[in-house]
Image 1 (cartoon, rainbow over the protein chains, first blue to last red):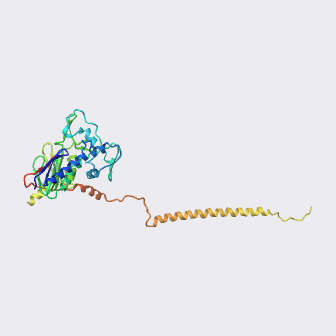
Image 2 (cartoon, helix red, strand yellow; image 1 turned 60 degrees about the horizontal axis):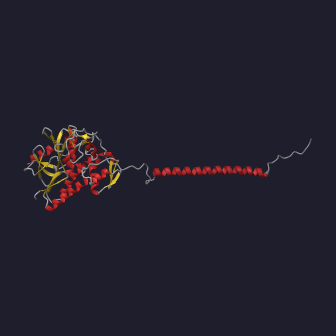
Image 3 (cartoon, rainbow over the protein chains, first blue to last red; image 1 turned 135 degrees about the vertical axis):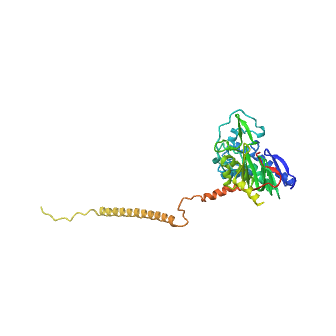
Length: 285
Length: 99
């Protein structure tokens, strides 16, 4: 496999394996372009322009419309758990500047903001929403960029962005809290609160908002890793499983998705699909 | 007092003719109303029968096509397809973790 290319985009480190220099540059350009469109911390991004607009219907670019479509599909597939309308709730929890600039804030959190998912729809290239509803597409954009980056590789290789990994061909992947696994096909994504948390009002807050409460989720898990056919599937499922708390493993099993859960004390719990995949492969070896 | 009995006095010809004419006009008017009302009624009945029996007429309010809920769920859940993991066979090349 060709030497891995590394660059930084979307606030995380990106590693591309199996790409030529030109392919690596093309994938880096893809990430930069997505960041330019979807960053909520760049005033010139299309996302910020849409969120600033007072109009109930806004014509958007094809890339933006596609991301909104994916976000709404993710919301449907998870029963509304992965929700693109929780930006106000996220900011009320304290995540209102770029994470690198986030500092402990003694002020209390704002009032929890409920979901406005039912107030958003997509009609071709037009995003329709109730005035005042703002979007945050970070929940799907990075994973989609990983999938799109992998699609630009002509042969075997992988793309990893901030721990979301998609591979064409077998890939050995280190797991949270120790251990590793062989990714035979698809992608692995991990969601959790280990690295993206902050102090607000004297308490630890994090970015995984529960749409049922409009506040950071109270989950027994620190990190949830899911294996999906695509990075988008893995990432969306990992977020939903995290938000579901103790019901997360069963929810993943109901969809045949292998999942691995890490508690705050380091205890690792694998759902039946994960355990079965590992044991079946061991038994066959 | 004697006298020749007189035949009963007839109403003037003009008055008798006018009365019959007025009666005929009334009958004609009633007949027109009856014929018109009957025509409308027959048209209405025919319209209803046509809507109820002719194949191209919609017999119920138009509704979106419905599909079984399980099919809808399957399509929605198709986003969440599983990948394949196996035990490690070599040292890890990359790491999955929260970013």
